[in-house]
Image 1 (cartoon, helix red, strand yellow):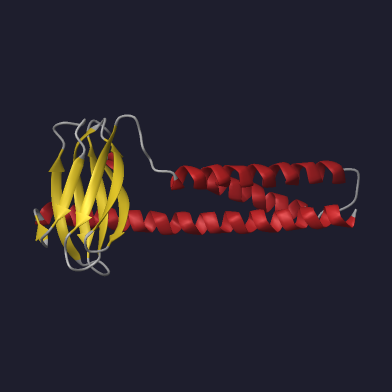
Image 2: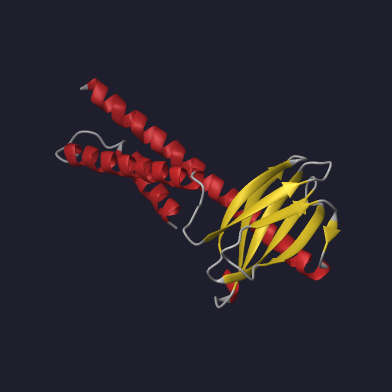
Length: 198
């Protein structure tokens, strides 16, 4: 994973900042500068890419409208065909939707003909599950959530497992990203201080 690789390089750069003087001091600083600037550039691109809507040319727009009286936390799980078993389910957090509000997500359905919508009230309390078939991939979908319903206990159990995996992966990712950003900041401060002393 590139984020872990960046973390290793940033740790090396931090270690190099403690080595001062000598004939290699110039190249030491060049390497630290390249690592820090490259890491900062990567995360700038990474954040912009994640914040911009994932609209694709062949994507399907899915509008989820919450008509229930409480805020519901929604997830969408895309079922992928003709892929290895470990890639069959692609989970996405839509977010918490207040009553009478909606969210729009864009799904790449090139290898999919079906997705699931999962809704939680509070922590881990599944109150909504539906299967949505996509016979026409050129027609956007509107999901109106008006009742607490579970279309399939068996499939909703799988969905709950996939949502738990997504949450776990997001926690791991947030830890790695936080460490990377902290090291970028520390390396940048040390580079700035060394420039200021000169």
